[in-house]
Amino acid sequence: MQDIERLFRQLTRTLLALDPARLQQPVTVGELVSRFVPYRTSRRALGVESSEDYELLLLRFASGEGGFANTEPEPVRRRFASEVKSPNPDLSVLREFRDAVFVLQPIPLARVLSGQTEDDAYAPPPRPAPTAPPELVEAVEQMDAESEVIEPLPFDAVRTAAGAAEAVDVTPAAEASPRPVAAAARCSYCGGALPSGRAVHFCPHCGQSQLLGQCPRCKAEVEYGWRHCVSCGTGLSFDA
Image (cartoon, rainbow, N blue to C red; front, side):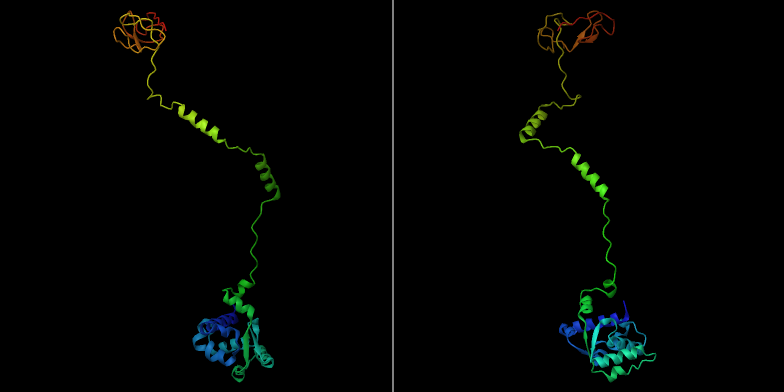
């Protein structure tokens, strides 16, 4: 930020705090020096080291440098500009023409009121976001067009599928009840005739379980459907 811009901002803040209407009204050089931006209370904000630096800064501002203010009358402004360009400027012209007035320019005033600095005004515009190459965009669009679109099922089909899922037995194998083995024609324990054409769990005569049979020779337990006893090798016959 330039030193003249700091002076302009300090003056703008002071006028705004006193009366916002003063931003649109002329300000005299005498008011600038003695009331609005005095050296004693403003030198730290302006960044000046001495009263000579302060007066030279005011002289540059009143000459129109930076375009922050328009000083009138014009001959006085030219006198200020001439002293600024001099190798040994006469700073007493500020007191000589203390009744000269200047008006704050609207563009820098609007920039200060919006919080924008002069550096922001001349900053390069932001770079646009990178875009994908046209061939990549075309390839993606083609993939989207060729992808299979899954149509939603109608409500009746969803309801039917849900009913079918409920009808499926999802009981784990370890917890499922054992299915009864088709009974042999006769009980392997007592030899009694067993009912045919149905699954028989127990013998109606002796009450022995028919899920496991008994070898007729060694009396070892055998499972229904075995052809030979695993203990003695005796041939077995189960009639469904």
